[in-house]
Image 1 (cartoon, helix red, strand yellow):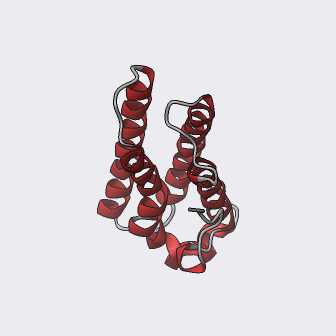
Image 2 (cartoon, rainbow, N blue to C red):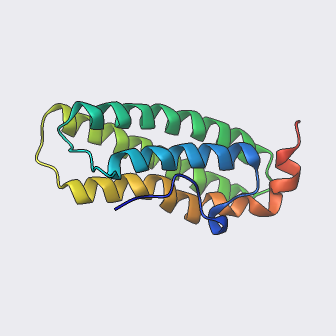
Length: 139
């Protein structure tokens, strides 16, 4: 099974910096899914997941700066920030599980990681699309 290393056109937000970051995050998913697929207990999986966590944190910081000037309603901004926090909490829990060598279902772990990026993009980030023109310009 392969995974595209870039968002399909339906998932482009229209803000070049965010679309580029989304493509990088999707590339990381592709590194996990393969081919060849990476085992959860491998050093390679640990490396990719660690890098993914750093990229997610940086991406969310960037995205939240854009949210502040987006024009989205306050409740939408709050929900978006909560979603970021929830993802980072899930990421931390996964890291603890991996360190403690907990029995994990590889398919469930990969589905969760995919939801952090593709699911979040579809549910939250696409709401920024109507503001893309203004948000693409420097402040």
